[in-house]
Amino acid sequence: MRQRAQMFGALALAVAAAVPLAACRQRQVEEVEVSVRHVGFDPEARAPVVVLETREGARLLPIWIGAAEADAIVREMREVRPARPLTHDLLLSVLASTSVRLQRVRITDLRDGTFYALLVLSDAGRDIEVDSRPSDAIALALRAHCPIVVSRALLDRVEAERAGAPSRREARGSSARRRRVAAVDKFPSHVIGLRA
Image 1 (tube, rainbow, N blue to C red):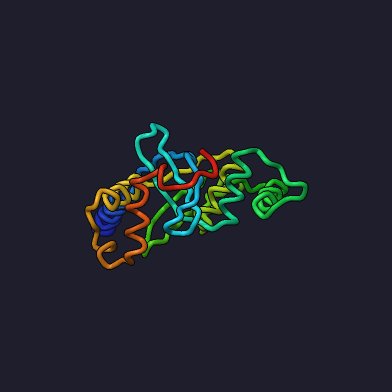
Image 2: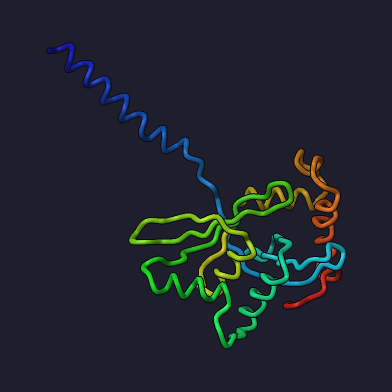
């Protein structure tokens, strides 16, 4: 009986030690809140670009987007209300009719020249993350008046690419992507403004 109690005690101790260790292993991602500084058109890339800026104004994150999404972002920034709801307005109306709320938008990664984002929804106290294109996520965040956050590591990586320190991914990446990243250094003279 004594041996069994010792084994149980050792097992309980191992579990008690493992729980904090598992929590330490979970990667804590430091995120920075950003806002939309500018939406413009990049004539070299022939595409709209949304430029996010950290709250301190010290760092920029350019994301090339589609024309429809650029229009949706600019409409909200200018407080233009359509007669009938557009897609982003409709989605927020659907969420508003339920208990689900858009809490924040997270710009999470850049892979092969494509940015990734998550919508963080809240439903009855639990968070739900939904994959989204950053352009759609930004358009929704502006309408929902919720924060847009970017991981500090992603900002560092994009900044390093802009500074000319090529990452392994960039070295393998397309020359068009490298030109677009370099073009932001000319911002704003290079980008035709839709909203300054």
